[in-house]
Image 1 (tube, rainbow, N blue to C red):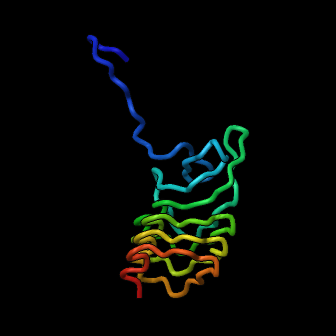
Image 2: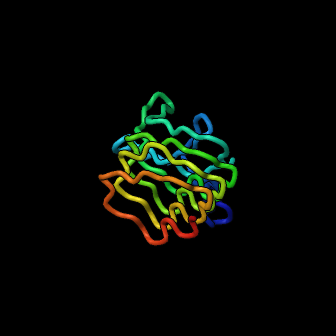
Length: 142
């Protein structure tokens, strides 16, 4: 918009491209992949992450989680499919009720502070393919 010779642009306040079935996604159109990110409504309960998502007749492979579940205090368990290779920074940080992570066979990277403050997390099976664990990934876990 041009107002009095000044160009004004309106930016979207959302940090995601779209929402489907309660999950919020950022996408990479060049390789048709998606990352689950934080959205407008915090996650809670038991979550099963899908392998793919269809939006506007396009199918995206879900390959990563980045900050999506940060401070979701009522989240209790998560099933992560083999197609996800990266858990980014703060993916599950501050999820004090999270006690179980299942799956994770495809994970090669765990980001900084990924599980920081997950004080109820009792067991996590790290996959053989895991190449890197970020700083403070398991800080404040019991």
